[in-house]
Length: 411
Image (cartoon, rainbow, N blue to C red):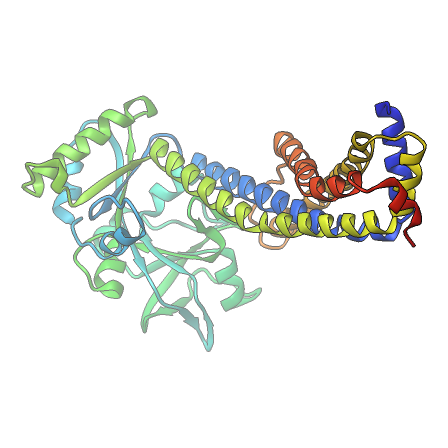
């Protein structure tokens, strides 16, 4: 039997039971759509994060306390390390390769104003360095300056959402808000910006790091230090200078005993790519289990179809069809079913991915890009057809082995 006739016969067989064919491919549709959604969202997350990192500038270096984590078990040691202190900042300021430097102190808590309360990200940093790095300046008011940092001034610049939650449409600049029962005067309000680098600017309360360190956190160390090299070409050399300087201030002679680590943009990009790729692969593997369930469903329905069409098989064999012809027809029906399910699943996955990215962009202001990989779509289509081939072999084999005389007598 030529391929054209086999295809025509397979489509006629499938078309005769439209509802059953539709239910057969449902598991494949769900599986492929889930895989496409996970992969698309993983790619979107990677592009969003890398885009935000790019906004910080290729000349940015982050110095963090503790040993460089090599796995989840190392994270607590990094988070609670107190190895970065004032002496380190003062020593690093003397390096000719550094253009700008400012410590970061992270504070947990809420802010309040006349009974209204909001829980922002409270960040002690340099407002001028942040403005320069992110090209972010107050919509109203001013930034605090280095003089405020030296004097440990009780001043704060807030994000647009913080302002809206506490003041509504009223003016915020010049008013005092409470952070951990201490009054802070609002000197500026950032315009709506959404996500920038690793935080949401709209939900930030930015203080001088000296103020946050002394009056709010009550610590004598920094959670990290942000450094700008004089240009992006000097980043690697600057990173080495930083390591050597801190080993000297910390009296470290063996690099394996470093109680700090340096992260460059390139390093952060590679780390994030690796983490997101592994996470996406893991999630895709989990949801792909539904394809296995769908494949078993295809096999069961095809076995039922073989039983129902026993007379048809006997008649075709009586008219000269070979075992190979019967095998090819039922195997082709299985592959066609799962391939159609794959196409529908890819389209639904694209639609759901677009809707999720639209919601995240419009409602949560994350600037989440919609991304669809043609290669992933083709792989998903090929895999769905492969599932049909694997799970269709047994039913097709059972159909091809039927005795034509017994098949014609079957009722």
